[in-house]
Length: 71
Image 1 (cartoon, one colour):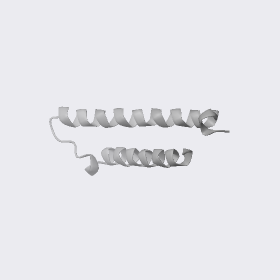
Image 2 (cartoon, helix red, strand yellow):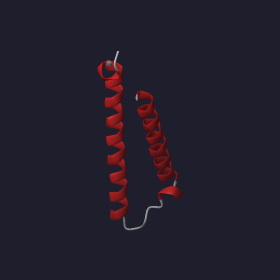
Image 3 (cartoon, one colour):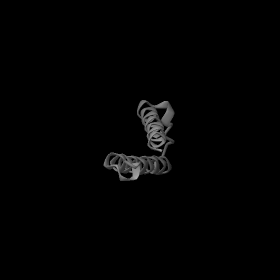
Image 4 (tube, one colour):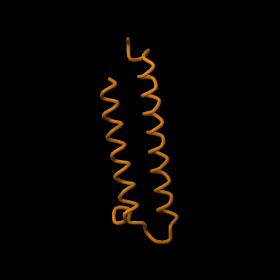
């Protein structure tokens, strides 16, 4: 079956696109938060910020691998 007609491929592509939109919204929120906060928010020097950066990077890398696998 051609990947464009395979329901699993269509569902995976939809999930990838949704995850990409989530990452974009999260990054935009983080930028807004940094601009709005009175003090700078050193993301990489805090446990929460570092975890968010690592999770975003891990998810981005996973999306790249899924896209390559689907091609």
